[in-house]
Length: 231
Image 1 (spheres, helix red, strand yellow):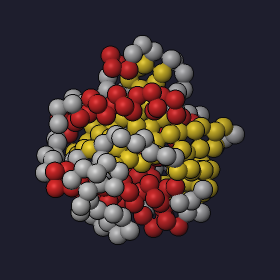
Image 2 (tube, rainbow, N blue to C red):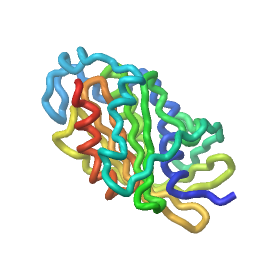
Image 3 (spheres, rainbow, N blue to C red):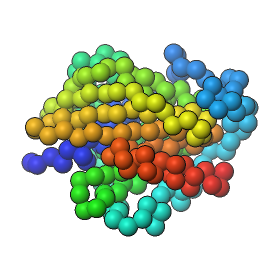
């Protein structure tokens, strides 16, 4: 079976994120008990932000008219349940490697859209989640720390070995209350794909944009603006 590396890359990223996201254990993280160290916004104001339903989140996703010409929305993929095993990264292994390839984070309120660009294999995926500030902040912080803590490791998904390289990137300052960013390189079958992933928490809303680095940089600002416009 031929494997589309770009699609696999986004799916594996989601798979690695999926299991620990629902955890409320924030050991080793910095909860928003005073003010965000990134923006200085009072934590009590963020704590009062309303949790949004999945239906509300869906209306805040970017669509083709927002992205411009050349983008085609991918149909929702059926849930897959391939076993995911992490080799060579104890921090990720401890968080858990079994997840649904192509799945989403385990927060209860979520929405997702994936687009291809220019008829090529370039993709951009937007995910929106809503939960309490502590759960969003603690969960995603633990995950990014684990993923960027191992420069190289291997993931075996559904029997397919994928060599991984991770690199922490400077987060986009001035957006939301907290920000994270990383660059992931997926190599399998003699092909490599580079995926950039940027996450931004704004109150009780978490935005994650993944895909081609150029597309992520081009649209992350726009995605956050639309996601928070009605907040």
